[in-house]
Amino acid sequence: MSIPLLICDDSAMARKQVRRSLPEDWDVDITMATNGVEGIEAIRAGKGEMVFLDLTMPELDGYGVLKVVREEGHKCIIIVISADIQPEARERVMSLGALDFIKKPVDGKKLQDVLRKYGLI
Image (cartoon, rainbow, N blue to C red):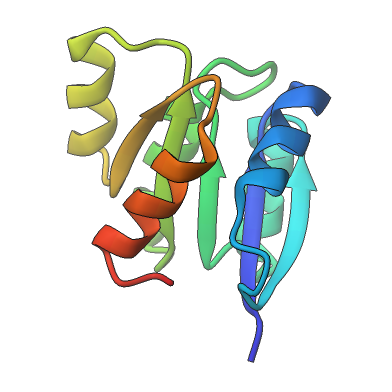
């Protein structure tokens, strides 16, 4: 059965880069969101069991998405992919429930290593 996977990033190039970095044989059903509001709507609709989340987006940023996910009790695995690599950003997303943090631009090997680390592939 396919895993509902959400890629939430306001950059079309970044979304495409994440998609290309996924394992070719990974059985996922991919949904794209261009901001945090769209991301939350997709999660509420069951399209985000696994989420790759940017932090800096219009309307609702990644921190806001993490807060809503936690407040509403959604059971999704969230990996943040962001250019904001300051230790405070990493600590904050982890405290809000993110599984891990990958810096942009995303590297296919690093992404797959993180997925393997948690037994997701």
